[in-house]
Length: 106
Length: 391
Ligand code: SF4
Ligand code: SF4
Image (tube, rainbow over the protein chains, first blue to last red):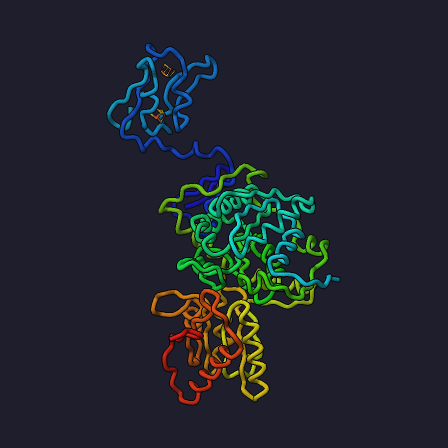
C-alpha cells in the first residue's frame, strides 16, 4: 500500500491521498516492473537449432518479449517475465523455431 | 483601464480567447456556438494569436484533440452547443479523469429531439456529473469575465479539472450588449503562463493508463477532491479578478436576499429578468429577491442552504427537464441543500423556457405571486409546476 517514487510503482489499494491524479504515471519505461508473465495460459518455446535469425518475431511481439543478445545481435530467447503467451511469434516464425506449448510456465 | 465596447456574447468570448492566446484551439461548428471558433479563426488568420487552430471533423475529435493538447502541456480551448456536446460525451469524462484543464465554451442550446436550435440548459445539465467545473453567465460581460477567471480555476494545481463556460444560446451568444474589455496586457498578466506539473512535452509521463478495481476508486476520490477545491479556487480567482476590474463575483449572486421573504433561484440570462421583476415588486413593498447560480459544479451546497433557509417560499427555476417525474436538476440539489438547515421554506420547482420558449417579466412575476399565495395559505401545493406551458 505504498508508492515507490523512484520507479513510480503505485501499489494496489494505495490511499487516494498518495495516488497520482487520474492514475498519471510520472515517469517512462516502468512497465518493465509489471510482471505480466503470470497471465500466460500457454508459453512459447524457442529452438535455437532451427532459428535462422531472420528476426521476424521481434517486431510482431506485442510485449517486447523477444530477446536479442546485445553481443551477438541475434535472437536469443523469450522474456518469460513479460511474455503473455499470445502465440503471435510462433505463428510468424517461418522456420518452426518458435512453438507454443501447453501451460503457463516453461 | 478597460475599454468600453458593444459586442455579442460570442464575440466577447472569442476576444477573451485572443487575449489569453491558448496553445491549441480545436473546434467543430454548431449553432449557436459557431461564431466562437469563427471569430477566433480570423484572429489566427490575422496573426493576432500564436494558437495552433485545428478545424477537426467532429466534436468527438475536438474534445479528443483538446485532451491530447492539454496533456502535451498547453492551454487548450474549444466551443460547442447542444448535440455537439452530446457527441463529445465520451471524451468529457476522459478530460476530467485525466485532469486536463481543457476550457469549453458551452453555448447553451436544447438537445434534439425534436430538432430545435434555441436555448435551454439541457445540454450542459446532461453533463453535470462528468467531472467538469460548470459556471453559468447572465450577461455577455459575465461570459467574457468567466472565461478569463475559469482558465485560472481549471489550472490551479489543487484543481486540475476542465472548465465549462456556459452561457445562453442566442439570448447571450448573439445579442449585442455594452461590455467592458480588459486591456490585453492585464489579461495576459492575470492568466500568466500555464505550467502544469506533468506534461508530455515537458517530462516523461503517461496519461490515462488502465485502471483496475484496485485503483479506480481512489483515482475518482482524488478527482472529487479537485472538484471540492474548485470552490475555493473560484472564490480566490474571482477576488483577484475584482482587483483589476472592480467586478465582483462569487459562487452565486445574492440579489436583495438579506430581508427577502420570497425568492427565485435561477440560472443564466433569465436572472436579469428576475431581478427586474424583484425590483418592481420591491416598489410595491413586496420583499422579493433572487439567487442567481454562477457555479453549478462544484455545487455550493452548504452555502446555498444557509442563505435560503430564512426565506418563506422559494421557486427553483429549471430551464431543462430531467424527465424523471421528480424535478429538475437545480431543484433537486437546492431542496436537498435545505434539508440540513434548521428551517425549511416552502420550495417549489418551475420548468420554464424549454427549447427557447420566451420568458417575460410577467411570467416571472406570476411565479412570485404564486409564492405569496403559498405563504398566505400555508400550503405548498403542487411542487412540480410548468411556467409558460400551453395547456
Ligand atoms: S522468426 Fe523464427 S527464425 Fe526468425 S528470428 Fe524469430 S525465432 Fe528465429
Ligand atoms: S507469445 Fe506473444 S508475448 Fe510471448 S513472446 Fe511470443 S509474441 Fe511475444
